Amino acid sequence: MTVMPITEVPAKTGWDFAEGQEIVPGRHVHRLLGGGWHYEAYVAFDDALHYPVVVKALRPDRVTDPSALRGLRHEAETLGSISHPVIARLLDAELAGECPHLVLELVEGPRLSTLIRRFGPLAVDQVAPLAAELGAALHYLHGRGLVHLDVKPKNVIMAGPPRLIDFSIARTLERAAATNAPVGTDAYMAPEQCDPQDGVPMQPASDVWGLGATLHEAIAGEPPFGRGSDDPDATPGERWPQLVRDPDPLSTDVPAALAVTVRACLERSPSDRPTAAAAGAALEPLLRRPRRLVLNRLRPR
Image 1 (cartoon, rainbow, N blue to C red):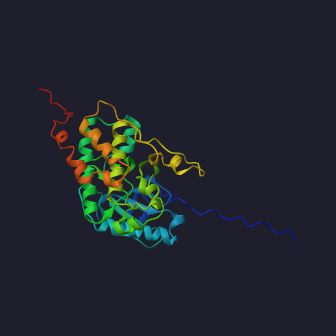
Image 2 (image 1 turned 45 degrees about the vertical axis):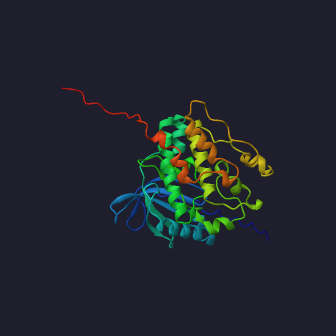
Image 3 (image 1 turned 90 degrees about the horizontal axis):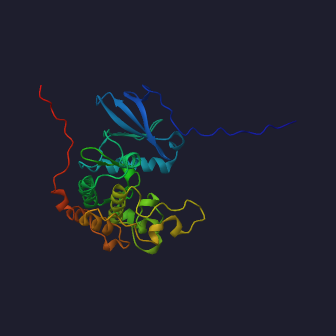
């Protein structure tokens, strides 16, 4: 008798929702927005709100994962406890059922990472207001006893005002201080996020580092330390060059107040970095400058 091998059917990793399909009753998909390892994001129309929203859904192969479900619940609780003009709002949450998901404010505008990739660095007179607005959001979070831990261009939507998004790894100060494994996105992680075993805890200054790395990339078009190796056998210094080298210098055309502030945010020791509020305050002189506006002029008839 010949025994046929059993072939495992791979778990479905994407929802593949079609346009108009309901995620749950009254919430219809418009289009796929993006995704990551654990989530997919869709633009959808919510009948109760009678307004377009973003639905951030656990992928199908994650809906029975207790850790993924805890993470989604934690993100809902975090967003539900805060309210700031520069943070995208939570509108609803479905934490059970076939497709657990969050319903978030739809912010019209490209991600900062997309702008840099398509058009190159931002004009310098756009960076100081961006720094002040992101600094305000981080100051607010830190005052609420929270840290974001993933401040980067991909998590900034360039709207008016910009919005900080993705709180999937945000945590309380107590939980951040107790974290003993790397957390974040490699190119934007503070040294204490890369190597928390050295006794320096993750803290508000870790977000200030992410702010500095984000502003550096907005100015220069590249992260301040380049991108480390993804070789699984790489040393910590090869994976995270920020552990062993200084940031790339900014152009001499960058106003001194901005260059000095960005560099201060990237000090290796957390105690040497400014607070989020102080970083914004250091750029006050630049914010008083007239900002260049592009206006549509009415032609006389």
